[in-house]
Length: 125
Image (tube, rainbow, N blue to C red; front, top):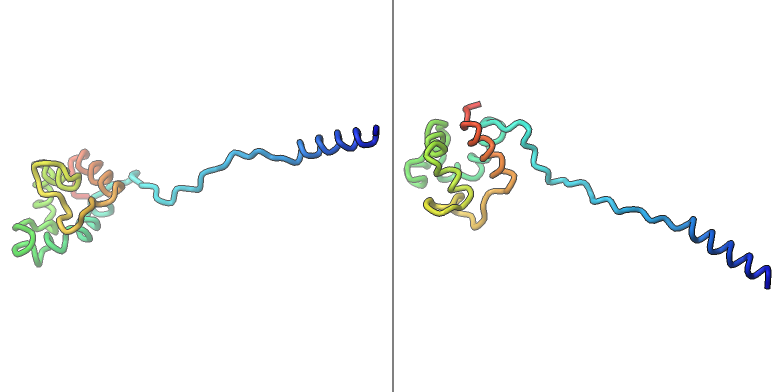
C-alpha cells in the first residue's frame, strides 16, 4: 500500500509540472492602419482614383461627376475646405454619401487617413 501511495504522489507531482498554462497570444493584426506618414500623393490620391475616378476623373467628370474633377487637386481641396468631402466619405447628412455606387463606405483605415490629411489642412504633398 505504501508503494501505491508513493506512486500516486509521484504521478500528482509529475502531472503538476507537466501542465503548462500559457496565456494565448492573439495573432498579429495584419490589417493595421499605418497613419505615420499620411500625404496626398501617397495616401489620398490613390484612394480618390480607385474609388472616385470613375465618376470624378478628368475624362468623365462633366457627364458623371456633377462637374467635380477630383484629378484636379484644387477642386478636391475646395470640397475639403467646404466640409463636403469629410461628410461624404463618412456618410453624414447634408451631402450625397460617397462613393455613390457602393453601399458601404471606404475602409475605416482610408477614412482615418483622409481625416488626418484634412485636419492637417489637406496639403498638396
